[in-house]
Length: 353
Ligand code: NAD
Image (cartoon, rainbow, N blue to C red; front, side):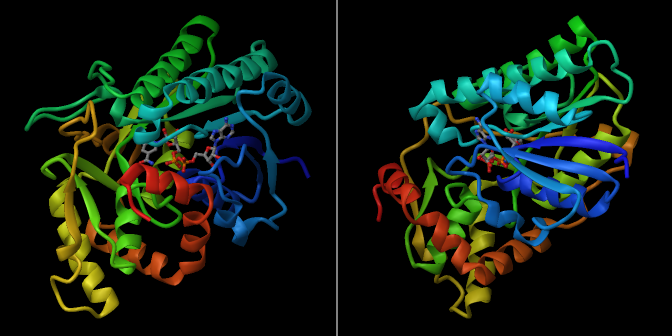
C-alpha cells in the first residue's frame, strides 16, 4: 500500500517531539512516520513505548550533524515532508556550552535543509519543511506588549541565538531555492515527558522529595505556558493548513509570573500528595539570577487561531493537574532520567544532591 506521506520527524524521542510523533502515528495511519533522534541525554524512547509497534512508525537513530548519514537516509527513504524538532533545548546548558548549540541547532538544521533541497529541488509539489522554533528568538518584553509574527528577532541567550539563526536559514532557503516551508514559534511548553531540568517537572520532583525549589532572582520573570499536547495539535494544524512561507506564533494566552506559577503548583501538589496546605510553598528558595535572563515573554497567537482555527484545549489549571497526575503515576520514568549523567549535571547546576 502506498502511503500518502512519508514524514521525517526529528527529535521525536524528546519532550515535544514524542507528543508530535504519537499524534501523527495514531491520527494518520495512512502516513509513514520516521522518528529520527540521536538519543542525547534529552531523548528517551520510553516516551513512545505505547506506539513503537505501530506499522506506520519507524525509529531511526541518527545525528542531524552527521551530513553523510543524513544524506543517505534522505536518499533511502525519500521523505516528502520534514517536521524538525531536534535541538539542544535548555537555556542553562547553552550558557555553559554554546558551541554545542550552534552545532546542533544551526549546522544540524542546515544539513537537513540541504538534504531536503538536494532531493526535491526540481519537484517541490506537495513537499513541506516544517520548522519548530521558540518565542525566545524575539528577545525580551517590558511589562506590556506581545510578540507577533512581525516582531524583530532580538535573541539574548546562546540558545535563542542558535534558534533564531536556524529560523533565518529556513526562510533563506525558501527565498533562495523555493524550498516550501512553514515556521512556528511557540511559548513555554509543559506536560508529560518533560525532562526534569525544566521548571515545572523539576519542581514537581523536588516537592515529591521535599527538596528546595530554586526560583531565579525575585521570581518576577513572566512566561506564557502551553500544554504540550496543545502544541502538538497546533503543529498538526499548521502542518496541514499553514500557508507556505508563513510563520505562526503558538501560545497559551496564559501568562504567569514564575513565583505565582510556583505557588499554584505548590497548592496543587499539596492536594495531590495529601499534605497540609503550605507544606510545598515552604520549600521555595530564591537563587542567583541567570545571566541575560529575559524579563517577560508573551505571545500573540491570534494568527493561528483566526486563520487556521487552532486554540488551546485545556486551561492551565487542568493542564497542570494532568501533568502532576502523570508524574505521580510515572515515578519510574522520573527515577530513570534523574539518575546517572543527569544527576551529575543537576548537582553541578544547583549545588544539590
Ligand atoms: P528536548 O530537549 O526534550 O528534545 C530534543 C530531542 O532532540 C531529544 O530527543 C534529543 O535526543 C534530540 N537531539 C538533540 N540533538 C540531536 C542531534 N544532533 N541529532 C538528532 N537528534 C538530536 O526538546 P523539546 O523541549 O522537546 O524541544 C523540541 C523543539 O521545540 C526544539 O527545537 C525547541 O527549540 C522547540 N521548542 C521548545 C519549547 C519548550 O518549551 N520546550 C518551546 C518552543 C519551541
